[in-house]
Length: 128
Image (cartoon, rainbow, N blue to C red; front, side):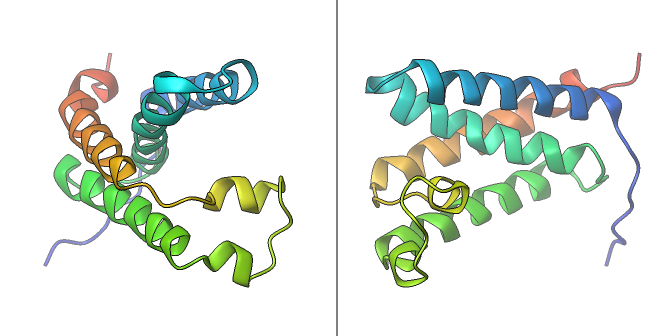
């Protein structure tokens, strides 16, 4: 069994910060359509992946699987109306993060985001 090691990776942190800015831009300036609902979900998994990569040395495939699993749990929560049952105020940060509507296509977007993140891990985070 491998031990989880922590080590700050500046490049991964910068990638996560860049993705966060892009996601905020999509949320603020894109009102709907493919970019908002599909590309945004692909990038959300990349954001989770590179945020975790910024301090974790887990292999890329494991990290991608964790990010994908996390997103699937959130999607399951949407299917079971967990945000409503927990009383998250509409429009609150928690309600936005948890989402509100289950969509099976989101699972495809999450899978693509996880695979893409694992493939881009080494080129993005390699040392100078």
